[in-house]
Length: 98
Image 1 (tube, rainbow, N blue to C red):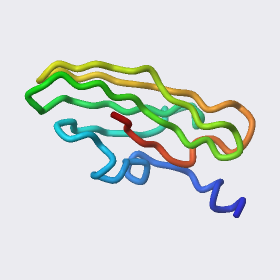
Image 2 (spheres, rainbow, N blue to C red):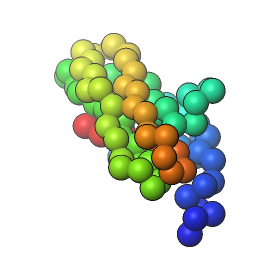
Image 3 (cartoon, rainbow, N blue to C red):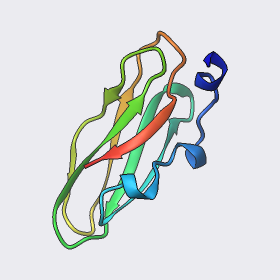
């Protein structure tokens, strides 16, 4: 089980399942280039109404964390970031929450 938690997360494998991304948003997720404990969700609101989202990091042995809530009007883009505690294995999963 520890080996599964230690698998590195890349931008392509970190993307939340399409059903997990709120409708109307298109998002890219990943880890910071030089910090395996910091994750992000960069989203664009392609919908017709204002939406709020945030990144949720599953942090292995440390408690999960949520990033800042970002509100986007139609056509706007924004980023939410969060940081897992230094204990444990770092980021295991990255999700976008509505």
